[in-house]
Length: 156
Image: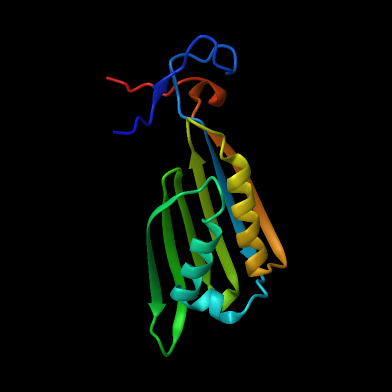
């Protein structure tokens, strides 16, 4: 059974004052506007699936499952949504062909290696495939509560 959380040793590199457990990860979010890719990439779940699985073949990412949903129908597709479950976490993609827009959500974590470079490369490959005129990107380091200004304790 895989451990998702493991205790930090005293000699592990971490911000001073961080106690106990850490689940380091990188969460990348992107909103793509005015996409100039082939219309089928925005409208067809099968085409979107092919792209996402190809991008997740990036070394450092390990697909373990996937599901994609087609909105509309085969004769009149109206967007798609999909998720690739990664051993390292997930990739979620949602398309809006009527406004030529896409949202991306890619999160990776792993105790045995830093997958940040793989995540950034995969995200850039996805962005490039959609050929957006405008991109809004957000990057969030996750998993060390003290970095967020303290711990979140359950109240009784």
